[in-house]
Amino acid sequence: MRPRMPGLKGDTAERVIGAFCLALAVIQILPIPLGNVLPALAISIIALGMIERDGVWVLAGFAVGVAAMIVVGGVIWAMALATLFFFASIAGQEFP
Image (cartoon, rainbow, N blue to C red; front, side):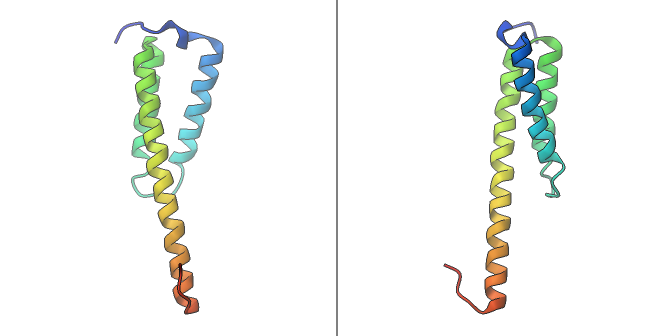
């Protein structure tokens, strides 16, 4: 790690990074088994990048964070569909 990409040092960049980390922290509190591992890893990578002023690591943390959001979003989508299938089967109806 070394100082790279000085554009990620400004106040605006820190606010964007903070908002992204807040979104990842909200994902962490969801009651999804093992759903907090990827967001925690992303926050850790971003924090290391911020400490060392290394923009490459911050961008890597963003990539892991986006992947975490996609995975958790897919899990939530699957849980919603499973709930709909469950209630449709209880009502005795076909679910399209």
